[in-house]
Image (cartoon, rainbow, N blue to C red; front, top):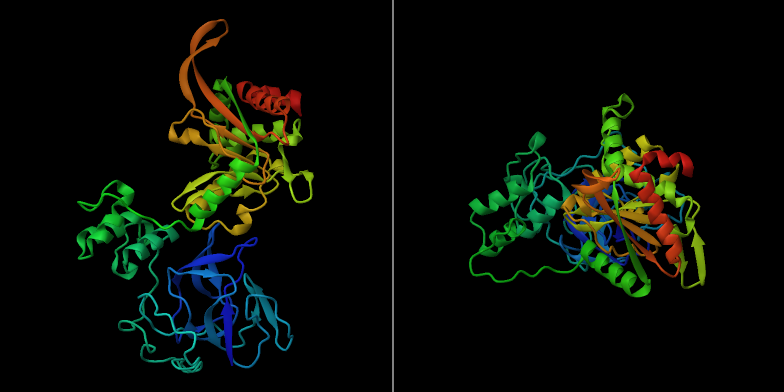
Length: 456
């Protein structure tokens, strides 16, 4: 029988997602939970698993299309009624054993091993019309087809999916480049952005494509005076969130410049210690730990203003957001229960969080539920700024660059390592005194890490 799969809500109330690429084609036999598409929500790039085991009979949307939640995107032919979802929801029937996945539940594959997939090219699949007969070009599940399905472009030849990251695949899609034709120069044959740009530069592609390839390197096609990019995905969500935050919460920002030489010396000792061997310790790690300690004395900075219920929600846990600049734009994934972590655990969590964010694999759950955030503008050589609150949070701390500069030290002028901290807070929730004491506590810890003993 034919099962229609509708795009589910992949995160808290998201209304649409963009289909970045299809991993299957009409006529393919797929297993339950096999990745069938890569979609970009307003929060993250998500691999969409199949809720059914069966044969793909139709792809209703092309790659690059923004689809509303609840709209059909793919149809399957499955054996019998497995009680699976038609729109990503839990099944109503219990006629077959089921397994959970990201989009709901589906029947367990009864056959041993993974079902064979139809040989196919990696050209962008042609969307099947929603009104076309569902079985028009479906191959029997038990007998793989020997020729490409109707409507497919090119000759079907078995091929392994090229190794690349989501941002690279997005760039290739924008340029109309088939990654199967690009030689990867990265580790293990990984295809990089430069590989795609070099391929475009040496290929016979339109000038507009070559211009887009050079957009990230400051080059463009001669004569082109402007470039237009659709506002969608992370950029669209970030813009809406920042406007809402800036015009909803009354921001106040305070600055504190401190001598962090003792903290930098402590950082050097920790890196040399066997207890921290193999860990990626940075100034951000110690600033984050200082913030978590200071938060115990000023809990009002770990709260949220709820307009609908007219309540102030005080969090008794800390989900620490770390602002991360990624190829898709600014994201703020958070570390759950960061206040319960040791310094080694916090270091490991920050490293994993930033690496995941830069690879474009941050899940919607990791981007939700933050209670307070840090942004490290110092990595860009910036000393201070006025950060905008992450929506739903009471405070955000910006740490500036650590610079060697003349500073008063023991009644003399000496070269010291100095940093400026910038704290923005929601003045509905945090009074000036509370914000000032919180910032002063963080500064005291960084200026003299031994102060922790007096604070805990």
